[in-house]
Image (cartoon, protein in one colour):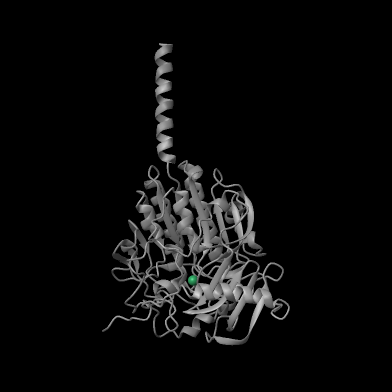
Length: 466
Ligand code: MG
């Protein structure tokens, strides 16, 4: 009898080991991508009023990067860069006239581009995009055309399809009572509109519920979840449990609900015993929309806002958490959303095709503790113009615009400006006269880079003909 029990327990152990190995063979990935959340909006990045205990914990158990950039200062090109690892200017996703896609846009992300979802699908991952898409709402630009098995969310920004009786400038008035129904934005499941206008007061909550359901459904298969929250983009809405709760006002309410959402996802991973084999990334698509004053976020110590290529418009919070795989640290090296495709590909053990040319670097050795960094430069485009470039600690500017991002007009600098971001992250001391050699070195790197940028067809300017 004892012998039988022994064999049964051995059999059980063997089955469990095989099962968990199978489960652990490829890591899961979750990218949480917020909209217009600034560098200074989280407790862990220094916000003194808004409480973000779940993100603070994620940062202390994981890696918090302090020099991490998006590749564009507005929504559409930034999203294109994250999903493809390519500078938007190379793939027709930057424009000097229509900087993002609109409800009457005809174009979107070219089908020929490889997205992270497509890359991971090639290794049998289950994929979902939940939240704001903003890479084209017509065929063949939708999430289902771009490697995602499942989609639930809004196709473009939450301030679009606005009731024309409401002047846009009314949105700037924090006392004006904006309602969700003032924006006829559709909520889509896969290819079907399931609600219009989307009730934005519960949208963060519903994205979270959808995410939790997707994780549970795929607990035995490798999965990639791209959760692109539509908040805290204006107009701001939060569900009733969060309204009026934050010391940070209406904007704080929204951020605290996003933090709650992160907590729900981590809780689900732990309950499903997936926390050891999942990488969770939290970041934002661009800096805060400061023209909205108290309804907009904070770039902390950084200069500039959404719509600018200053640090405040492009440097974003970036947290990566996977306690079993990554040692906690604060990382000051340069990283970018451009690097996510090669990095996730590497972590999943996928060899990238030689035909797949990206502007990204595989940061996985840095995540695992390598001291040198493959990325030493960052190019900052505003539309199709190179606004600035960073090399090491130094950033050289070719253009300037209003640090609030409005008006959008760019001004070409007659004399270039140079800043040392390591000792002057707020960009207050122009040192071009003191460091002409550094400026010359950056200009050389820029010339080489520009020689590789071939003009392509623009996908943002075409509108649907009536
Ligand atoms: Mg945005």
